[in-house]
Amino acid sequence: MTIDELIIEAYNAKDRFWFIDVLKIERTDSTITLRFSIGPKLFIQVFFSERSGRFSLALIDTSMRLYGRDREHGLWHRPPFEDPSIHEPTPEGLSPQLIIQFVTEVEEILLDKNVL
Image (cartoon, rainbow, N blue to C red; front, side, top):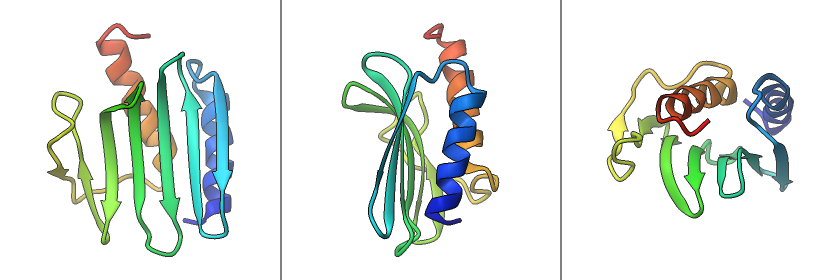
């Protein structure tokens, strides 16, 4: 996965998911941060570093992480919605379309919790 591939997938996600209002992109030579606004204080943030391979995908309300998926040192884990302080190992990782899969998971959670 490259930064350019993530940008393409981010635009595809913005077009695909009805509840995403705005996509903001911040990029350096080796990192990218994407922010998908859902509401005034609710958003999805994606961070990727090409150098380290670190990935962080999070559903955030104000400044509190509600749910996420992370890859650090080549290993995936998931802070679940029920208790985001826990880091459950997820050896399966994510599909090749990381953003699409994560936003789909967020949509299911938000619909289930009657947030959307």
